[in-house]
Length: 92
Image (cartoon, rainbow, N blue to C red; front, side, top):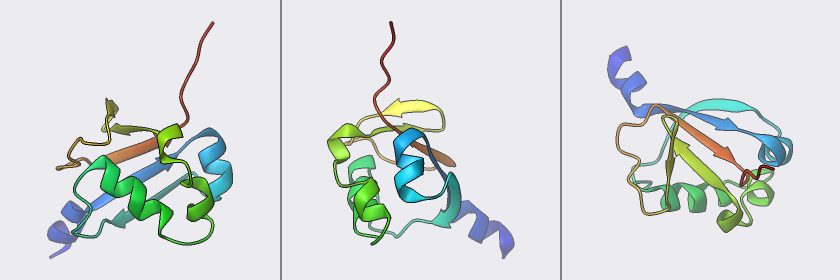
């Protein structure tokens, strides 16, 4: 029974200003069944209420990685175990 629960849970990690606005660096939870793609997840995050509504108010400014691989909004979440949210990274 524990294995089936663990299989549906993911670790969400928040970086930079997303961590500051959400007030958490990571959490482990089960995503709703309607959350199938990265875009679905970003919309769901914004609808979670305070403080996530503020952190995810501009989804176009958020980058997402599924199990350490960058993913577009159309990417399916599938069996990802870790999902990271971070702002665009620039270098110089």
